Length: 372
Image 1: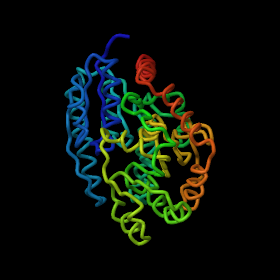
Image 2: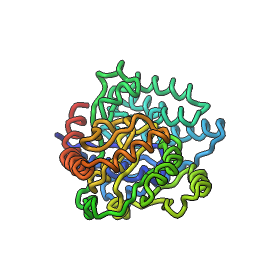
Image 3: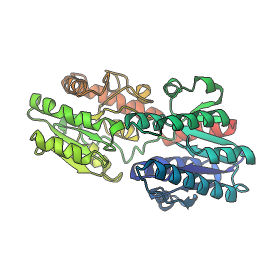
Image 4: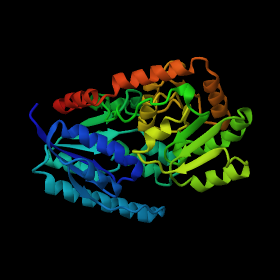
């Protein structure tokens, strides 16, 4: 394959998105002559980790006011389109991550005839629904317009075709992910049986992650398991509500609300857990799930996004039917009581090590880029 210049576009990022963006830039760096990244906010940290990418930053501050949101989003699109225009003679292929609403950049690629792969994680509309977003209807219309215009759509999993209502666009779809695990960093250092009786949730403290339902399930779980403790790691809008819930139920001495956990410190935290709980309403393919499994942790998750492609109930992890507090309680106790818990953790670790090596992911991206 002739080495091309490839551009990556993402909406201005928060801390939770830095690692996925870094992973993608690292993969594309192996396949491209030059990599150009248009992002913003803390997304600029990829420039500190990789030498090859040329990073252009756009600042963005979220405001819940509907009018200001529309204005800010229009400005982001105009600034992104301006930067893309300046780079149009340098870039051979654009990759747009989670940018279904970026209709102006999408249209620019049609005008300049530069191939575009728009990558969809299946989260945006589900997040809007779970937050009762007043802009849901126009967002949906823009999404459908974008899907119609683009020639290439990237998905983590075939399951997302139906979940994202993309059956009418199946001829445009490429199944590929940018998730790989550093198995030197994320490894099972402490055997599962030697770990403290500790379960946890690590991720964004927001509605779509279902973490508040997890917190509501804890009184019943901890009442049933007197020697069990809980870790909740992450930041987000629900932090104060979760703190209040723990205080009201007298659980603050058994639940560690750890706040933000850096990626560097994550392996140490993961090697303390007996079970990771992911009670999400919506997901793509969560990095934390793969990294936890690499550390020998059984994962209990809802069957959303690409999760069922990785977690098979009773084989490589545990699946719960929904994320109601009652269902979470029932399945946490089921998982902890499973006589096959250690074998399931081992199966999950083996699956991730076989399917999410860096080399495996680079090879798949090479196939996709050659086919565009």
